[in-house]
Each structure stands twice: as structure tokens, then as C-alpha cells.
Length: 229
Length: 86
Image 1 (tube, each protein chain N blue to C red):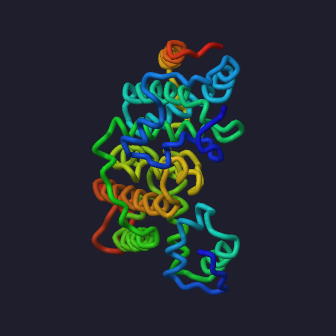
Image 2 (image 1 turned 90 degrees about the horizontal axis):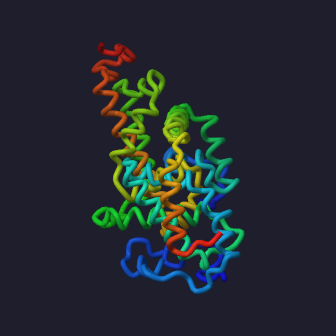
Image 3 (image 1 turned 180 degrees about the vertical axis):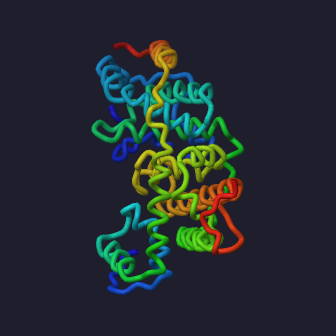
């Protein structure tokens, strides 16, 4: 007890999210850790299982499907139990479980792992706020003060693809720092930053579409704020 | 992001605006951006917009979602089948 890479309390494979080898190293499919003892089981029950609601909510946010979320939660806790000997006592069990949750989710969405991080966070930020300037000019910024954005954003999140969705969920909805999100996702902080900012930009674009569909834009500045009912 | 300049331009301020709102900059850089926003009428609206956007995004969290009882039972059954002994 405990093994693995120790300091972060993460399964040793999690820095390699997305590789088959990593998945296989994460948890032997058929084995239970030989070091599992009743004492460790008690620790698992008291330290890991209380986060089942957090894991369920994260899984539900990722999948947007209750049945799929159930499957991911079940698999997450099974893998967590089998990897429990790699967990560093005293480290963040919730973060560790999120890492496994996302790995399980990615395995269930194999095709969504194929992506390339090419954008720069600074560029994403500049683009986002340039778009905001355009929103002010065409009146669609009115949507921010005129309607409850949460339902529109939930729909937009549903449609957001990986890997941007996980970055947004972890930082913006689960209040993880860039560093914590980087540990969970197994990527550098700069990658989290670029994915996060891109994800926010995509959500912003979807809000603009929503605003236009709802009639919150005007062709002329003088008509700003007049909803076309 | 570790430079300590008293003055930053609009481009730099906007590049770092998300980091600023996420409290992810060094204290020096946080101060640089804050001072820029206090005196820049062009960047402040972006800041206000981004803050509202993030608040709305945070409120989209399904904080009430709880794992159903059936799922809790299923997880425990799975764990016990895998050897959990408590």
C-alpha cells in the first residue's frame, strides 16, 4: 500500500489518457489487487464512496444520458476499487475519481479521443472578446441581461465536443483549478487553458446563435434591446 | 505570465482576462490586469461580460443531481462481487 506514482494520488496511467496501453495499465480487467485488505476496503468505503454523487453528476454532465452515466459510475467505482492500492492516502479522492471517470467516459467514446490541440489560449481569449465586441455592435449581448442563461448554456454544453467539454466542466462547473484539471485530464496546464478557452468560445458562439434565434439582434444600433416578438 | 509590468496594453489584458477571472495569474500579473481594467473603458466591458458569462455557466451546474438509489445498490453489488469486504 499504496503504490503508483504517489504524489498526486492518481492511477499511474492517467497522465496517458487516451492510450490503450494506459487503459490496460490502469486496472487489470480480471484481477483484484493482491494487497487489498479489509482495512483498505473500509478506507475505500469511507474515502471514495461518499463521492458517488459527485462522480454521478460529472458522468451525467459528460454523457447527458442517465443510463450511460450509470454505467460510467459503476465502471468508475469498480476501477477505483481495483486501483485503490495506487491511491495516495490524504490526497484528493474526488479528483482521483474524476480522473478515472473521464478515462472510462473516453473509452466509451473512442472516436472523440481523436483530436489535436493546436490552438493557443491567448488566441482563443482574443477571439472570444473580439466576438464580444461584435455582440455589442449587433445587440446580441442583450441576451446576457434579458434571459436566464443557464438553460441555454446547459443545452450548449450538451452539444460541446470533447476535449473542450471536460475542461469546461472541470473548471467552470466543478471549480477545479487549471492545475487540478491538468492532473485529472493528464495534460499540461497550457493545454487545459487552450481547451477551456476554446470551449468557452464555442459556448459563446452557441449563445449568439440562440440570441439571434430568439430575436435579440438588430440590424441597427438604435434598435438594440428590442426583442422581435 | 510572470512578468511584472505596471502597465500592460489592451491586447495583453484581454489575452489574460480569463486567467484573471479564474484567479490563475501571479499576484503581480493580477495587479497589472486589475489596474488596466480600472483605467480602460474598452476592456472593462469585456471583463463585465466575461464575469456574467462565467456566473451563468457556473449556474448551469446540475448541483441537485444525486446518484439514484438503484445505482448506489448496483455499485455496491459490483464492488462486493469484486471483493469489497466491509
